[in-house]
Length: 174
Image (cartoon, rainbow, N blue to C red; front, side):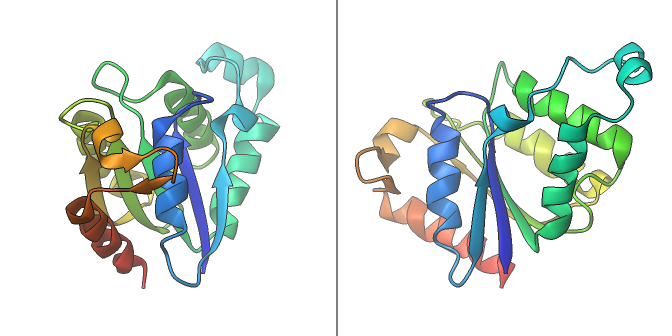
């Protein structure tokens, strides 16, 4: 299985990228590709920009990565209760080229934050909207208080209960 994984964040020190990279490598037998949203930075979407630029090559390249995958794993960063600007902008550009951005792929969506809710608000928005954009949501999981539950040096969950929940969520790819 070709698993496409990415954090919906542009932070170079993204805790969501740490989590999604760890999680992706828990999927037994998967050929994992972890993308960095910084490689897909685009001008702020507007219909005026779209008229000027058409469909940008980076948005089409991102959609090609989705098309070439068998499954998608996303970890959402929460900015003021919603998507990060970097993710939302890329998503907006991609949705103009293909309204079914996720192209029928099975998906697991996760999130984390330093706080007790672990990005629960953005995860709720993402899981609710995924089917409208061609995603087959298989499972979701919010990981609260990242720095208490994730060993940054070892790059793994140290909370065994959360690790078991993550493994169970990822088993839905099978």
